[in-house]
Image 1 (cartoon, rainbow, N blue to C red):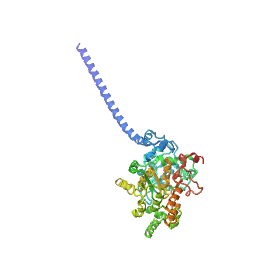
Image 2: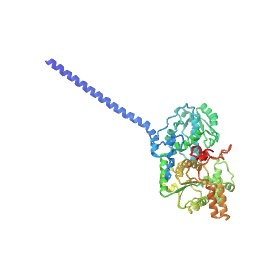
Image 3: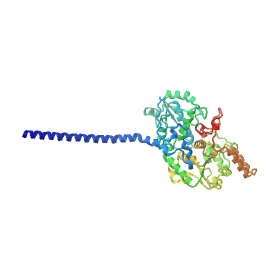
Image 4: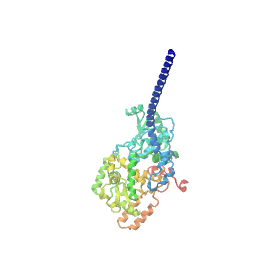
Length: 500
């Protein structure tokens, strides 16, 4: 009996020990599994969070290959096209799989909008050469001397993700090739201006295959306006209107400026190109004193890349090749019956001559404002960053009730095209050659104000950014209509235009 009791007692102890051991092992397994799950969760968040953020911001227009979103017409009150709910539910496009022919590096030149158009062209070229594009380098050595990088102006993660079904874009070269580039072993060259896609396929692609890396050190106007396949034109639009978004900080500040303006009623954006550098570059000195004209001439000679030095200001003005002065601009606004109570937002740098030169405009339109006066404290981080300041002006220009450029520079053209995309928002395209002739006649007493006003109205009734086709001039790309000012291939045109 005693032996049997001891055996049973030993068996119970063994069973208890086995159960205890099993419990400990199971507890350890659960703890390990929980820890592993948490660790995996952290890795999953690191990998997916940027894509989720991008996905939520990815508009349906991007996935449509540049097609207009149906909701664009719902821009009541001047809000940007595409609804937030559509953006949240849109999925990222699938990655395009292709054999990589090499790497394309590009250095953009010029101001913000010249570089913007160039980026669109370079993405398109990279796509059709089946190469990998490195995020473009922005110009830091031009007149404006802006140190901003691509990521300081544009949402680089969104840019890369939104185009992944077309072309592979990297923030930098792979390590081995990066070291090679840092040592200077990269073939660098400027492509020929206004080239069609065959030039890039026949001349540029072989160089990329040979060197593996090709650096294009000039990008302005390097792709033709016309004569390109429809899918190329559509991709240029997609990059411009969907993939190139400003950083959230710039977008938010731009929205705040627009909200302030909207609270005070309608507003006109006046792209008044009367800055010192523009006058010096163009050689336009009408209305300037002799001292001012000499100062502008000295500035023009100080910059060797401004090739034209001897300029006849009067002849250039009569040909309509000078920006309008603030006085001439005020006369045009009044002649077009722009209400004097409207806010006039100046999208430009510092006006040459300051308040003295602006007096002719502010006396007729007292509600003249600038971003510096609307958000003075918020712009301190943007000081000495002209491209970031220009990005704010770009946002406000798109949202304005009326956009009026006084000179046809890159911003004027690119904003014109973007406003056409936004359901042909009103853009007054001034006939400067006619205007200066009318102004001179009015000022010398040979034309009454009523006649002046009626002629200005009649001559500009068809120059309001309405649907039209680009004018093509064979072998003269500089003289024909610029693609980005009127990308009609990407716009909903009336039937009578679509059959032309």
